[in-house]
Length: 387
Image 1: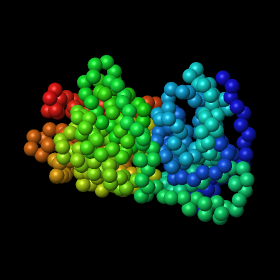
Image 2: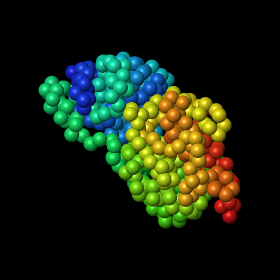
Image 3: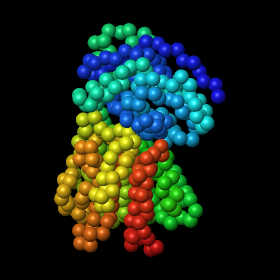
Image 4: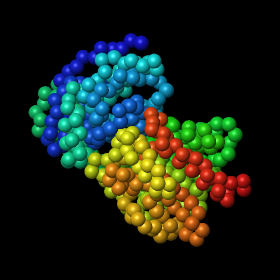
């Protein structure tokens, strides 16, 4: 494996509040703007970079040393890198892993991802924790020598994440099918709001034929498939802007079709049930977030990537037009809602559920993989099965 030696030019990172960090170029040269967020994962950077939920975000890695396992062609979660920019402290001099096919920086250059290295990512993360996620720009080469006030103006001219409608930008344009592994047991319509490749794979391994559909899909198109269940995926943007998707989900719930949602899908489920959503100060991102499953009392270490959350009461059921809703999972760091359940108002039978985190977690942890089994149980208990 040949690794390119990249020249390090002057680069600066400029936050919208004027805080500036000076470092060296990493990846592609030029300029980029987006929302600055930090990720606490120590491994799995390839999965992070290719997660569509990071669309229009500049990811700051809190792990100090990044890139030492290189890049391969098997671990991508989608067809491309989605982050708007990448920030690391110490890039690996060379990759050292038997699966590596090229270096991380080679891939960043190939896909035009502007980054910065050799900065104090610990100080930057502390700043974001205190001030909250905000817009940021990375500038390298000649751009880095511009007056700081001009760079701040470029950053503040970028759109904010609040109010952003992004799911349709990352969604598949055409439907496709992921076949069940072994005997087919169920058919599920999966709405792609920024789906990760491992998600339909986890379903397929459990005998589910997954029809992945664009974010613009209507309920009539879902109904035409006669699915045993419907799934809403993870994805980027502000859930308050996704009125079309919420409307479709309300039709799904009204029709009594079993539903499972992940991350953005959880937020849209909350909206469909009548709850509000809000932007977190700096979000949850990484693979070490503690969550309690309140149905079992089990604490899981989970993978997260979200900047918005559902505003629902933690300690009481809520009556909705579709049944009784309750919070099923909660983050132990800050009591943020991490999962919802919908039960039939009369029988108490589970009809739909969602989680805010990522149970597919290709890079780990895998504590929450049981949720796909829970979905299979929901599909099995539905009266449509075998009809």
